[in-house]
Image (cartoon, rainbow, N blue to C red; front, side):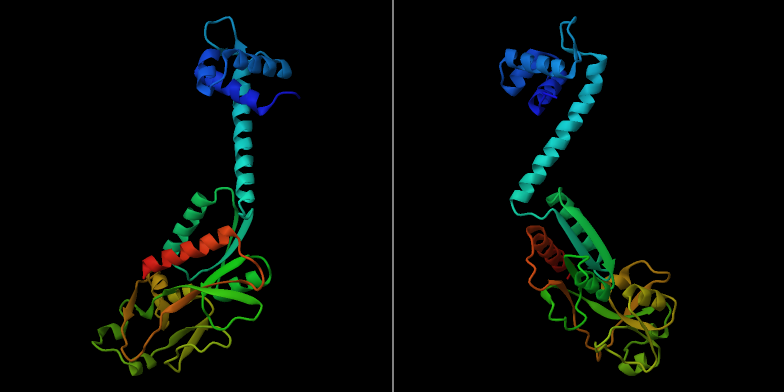
Length: 290
């Protein structure tokens, strides 16, 4: 095989332009140089790519098929070149992100779309789970970095950065008796079952003596929709579609802090350019939601 990519390019351009002379003008080469390149390609392939019995450079039957192959090879060559340039500039070839299921879907959707636009050659893996599960993904080296709701102190084996905040509130299902009260007090909440996030060594805001626990905010939200109790939920999760609409009640004596979102990765591991970009972009998207 003696043919090369430059010959393929000149063959494709000649086919697109319809003549050797037009192809030569387009690429700024002498007509004789383009003619020679196409002739050498035909000789190497042992095929007549053009029917020369006509005034214009008309593709032969074999030429039509080889044009498709040539375009695909040139596309692959361009992709290889782009990947090489990206790697030479310090970008990672791969990135694995672990994402807390409680993060706002709208922000994550925009983030993934923006990653595709800014890092088209990146091999991306997305892992989803609870705050605890995404931490485990990093610990087990299944993920390079994780983004989750701050659920308390991390082990010394992790590094972390604060990325943003999410609002939370007290939610009940549509038709709940608490919605009839002009003012909701802690004693009113204490009368009903509270649905609480389950997490070890974390002090949750507990008001009721009747408790059910789950490790998933989405499971808790569905339990609230099924009228199994009330819960303190991130506002974005309560707003997602559930079997019954959730309504927020305000209890002025129950001061709810903003939920902190953090990025974590294994201590001592350097973050690549794409990981740093993802952090900054998610920070911006969360800021736009508050």
